[in-house]
Length: 353
Image (cartoon, rainbow, N blue to C red; front, side, top):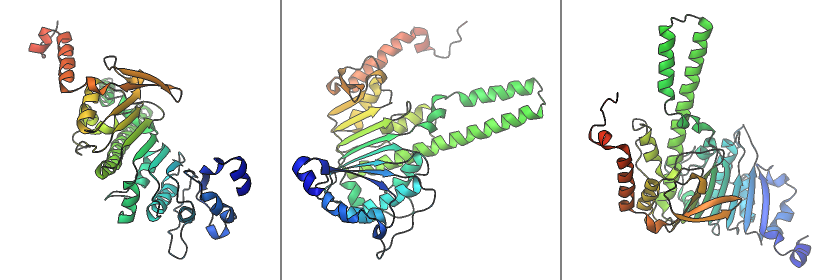
């Protein structure tokens, strides 16, 4: 097979795909074939199978199957990880530990999609991560990444799209009390909805904190040059301005982390994120070396200028960064204030009859 590939399809062996978790490598029949194929591999794709049970902890005598794979396939430059949507924590944790313990000096690009919050929790590698303090070896792996693309599921963001939900629920409860509704079934239903709402709110808050913490680890390295972030199934907050997004929702009490400053990032791609002029100015301020910003065209505010390109079946707007600075933001805010009228500017609390 190796001879046939070299003679007729020289590019065939540059892309390999494996499924994890694998059976114990000593019993895996593909080991004899994998070694000659690994030499030419430049791009490795790992499809992660769901697993509800913890992966056995590896030992020097019996390393995990993923660790043994990386000892053979170790010259690839690009890694794509495809996690499952459910039961992803344990297999991703095992895969992360294998990556951190392997000697992968060539890898510079990583693509992870689809990623859930449980997956993010398993992939945290900073000072506060999953189950293990990150060793210098593990940190070395992540510091070598210069290009990262992630696609995150946004199922847990439902609450973010309904900022008035708490007020509506309170109003509904008051109305119910005023109507003296003593129906036990109805009250039990209200209690169930309130409990569900609280769980969703807690999940949303914890997820925002986990995402912010994970991204912060990459900002510390200063080596990341290209960042591609995309919400896969809807719209979501700007992942690079989460502190500002939370502040808009009045969440300062539960989110006190400082904003992330990205030293070294030159190129940013944002999908499923609404972009206004203030966001562009904010990103330029936090990413001092930013040279290229691309966003979904339909999510960009009309006053944002740039060039539209068709990429991957979608229209992307490459923002003309030279047009936007603090002065342009002040002009936009001034125009918005003019539209509000003199009465609202001078006395915003005036009661209109």
